[in-house]
Image 1: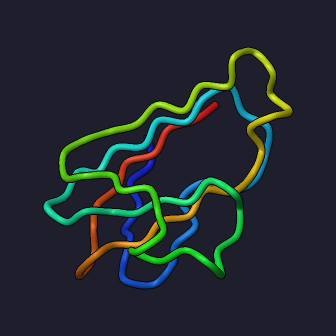
Image 2 (image 1 turned 60 degrees about the vertical axis):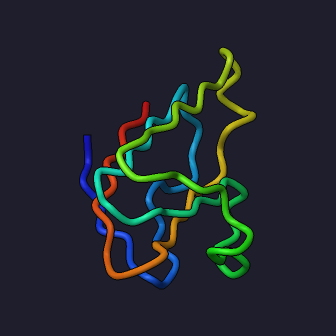
Length: 88
């Protein structure tokens, strides 16, 4: 599991590539916002998927690795957040 620091600018937390699953855990006290479409230019704290403090999300590919291959980006609401990422 990788530890990634997410700040108030967009940070790539998982590169594009075929994967079976991706586990993302917000190990911080600040909310992190995610985008799953690979577009780092449009993510903001207003339009991202909120990952609240001390919560995680499991993105499963349902056995078709070709459907979940975009980069995942994140941005923090304040300061820098500690995010854990694991994927295969």
